[in-house]
Image (tube, rainbow, N blue to C red):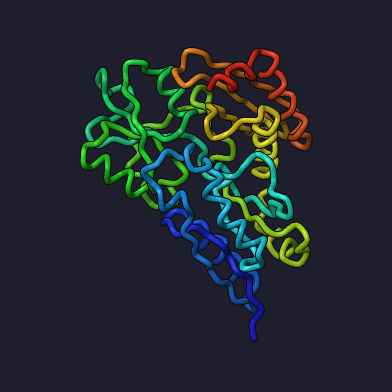
Length: 305
């Protein structure tokens, strides 16, 4: 009988793409193993018309998969890291972080070539407090409305003219072969990406040393360091799904450049911080950036969300 590795994943197209990416690499590395996908429908998927904040936030997508791990119904879970809580769940650990795709946000529309082409009072769809804040800061004349669902359902709502444009993560569209739908990119020097955006995480039980070692080859060290720094910012700020927080790290010539923001939903009050340092001290850099934001008054913005 073949040894098996069971992968917990959501059933959405994007989640399955990401899980199959991990599956194919495991099959190539370990031809003696049978790699099985355990497809889960989460509450976040079932209730895709309700604001995420009302059903536990983005981590709702993660918890159902973590339940499978903790109850030993799966060996690993594949997540979009931006959906994961800032602190690790007891008994679980992030065993590998795959190489990041483009971390930027993008503007998608059917009738407008770019974000600047939108007329006054155009309707923009997003479910993210961070995107709401930054869109309001750029174009306070626009009307922002809630849009939920997977990538396909959001694009369908755009086709049905429920929205003039929507804001999505570039990574999801690229992975699904839909990069042609991108009208324009929001540059990350202003439109700070979500923590972990574009990165895929492989989670396992922290006491499962065998599985941890089996999947470690998937890890992309540079992306892992960047994710550590970004997640540290969120953990120190104690941000949640109601908070407009972004953080993005890049590494150039051994130096990590970390930028972060905290803002009000109306976009009128945005605090920013940027620092650089040795990438091997990613956690220290994340702490420093977060504490600098707290010194500037980030706690007040977070508490008044």
